[in-house]
Image 1 (tube, one colour):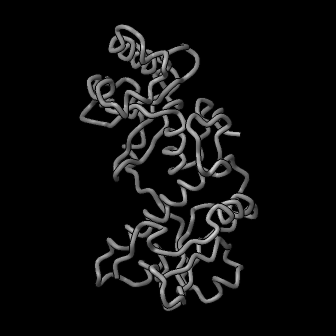
Image 2 (cartoon, rainbow, N blue to C red):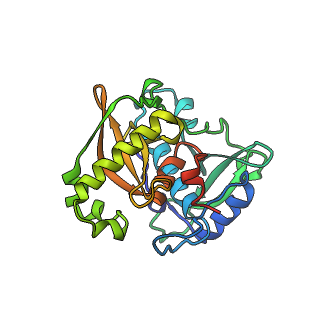
Image 3 (cartoon, rainbow, N blue to C red):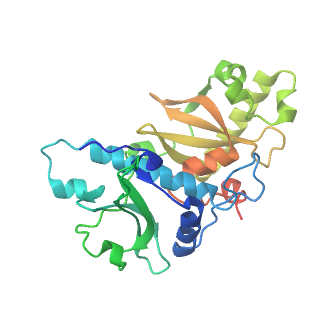
Length: 273
């Protein structure tokens, strides 16, 4: 059985934003929106939560699909439960009473339905919707290697300046004032070196993110003010050095970091309310 990894292709999802609002109320208190979003968003209340849930659903389905056909059925169920009339996945979030929260589906009964499943909502394990689900899926894991999770501040950073400045998508992420600056390549290299020195003094400002099954790091960079980050550079660990290949807006960095865990560093937490 191969499942579709896109939530909206897998199931019919009515009142999606209402479901997200319910989930935000159920889960432990957390900021799920940006205080001053840079770009207009269709979802103004829970954009961070929306991206997180879509990512977790996709990850769990892909992990389910990657199990060998002859593998233990219970192991597959603990990744993404799908039997008879029920399907569910563990969101990785907890209620205020530390109970896991699950996204639940039932068979779509409509004859003309394009999707086989219907999204019912988010529930904890005491819900009647999960009464006959056994085993309940496990909390999604992010098997990032221990060595990969360690940032080494003394490693050099090699910046792919041409890609960052010549790629339109990357360039557009830079502050407008910086885009008009002369000697932009020198400014970028200087900002990277300043960020590397700051991180050598305070390694905790560097945040891990998972990208295509690999560990990367998010390095806060100050281009306009030496005390306030403007963008984040992704650092890919190589053999004894880091490759800086892409820049992200701070909002993009927050959402990427949240896929692993709730950010606690000030340069990210100050973005949310």
